[in-house]
Length: 215
Image 1: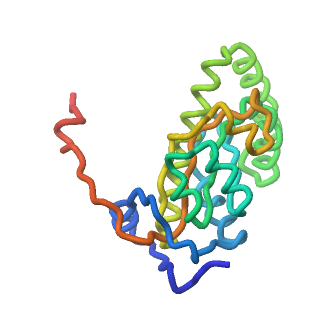
Image 2: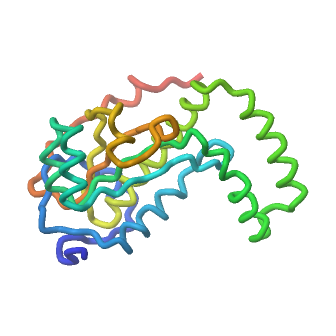
């Protein structure tokens, strides 16, 4: 159950993006209900993905047992794993195209496309992805998981929670740790979520004239 007094919902976009910080120590008394976590992930999965394949898959690590197992493969991030309300392990599904028919059928049912368009798209994408090298497909789905991961952090911030993206863990053991098929599920990142126990360190950004050009 969420500690309601600890979080404040906002719809102020500037406050959301400017208020996001990478937090490494959380208040362990703050919990997030499965209902709220589900709503947060529903918001996050509105992120775009290549041909709408939605290749992201999540493992929400919240039990003490699961956190302890995760801490074993993320020892340098043990504090945030253990103190957070949860850690969302984000994976990319190498068999994401298996869901294309279901995704498009839902669009047909809602009137977003016709059955004829669906059949043509499935045939076109089937031919396309049947010829795409495995590494290229892996790169594609990892890009998509990056998009949804950022959206998770913004959705969390809008709800008054803090997060931190974690790349420092043993990715070779990630799928196995959660009982997933290692050949199918590609680890992308971990995202700790909760309420900061102390203020995160402020950081600066390069000015736009250093990172952008106009032609």
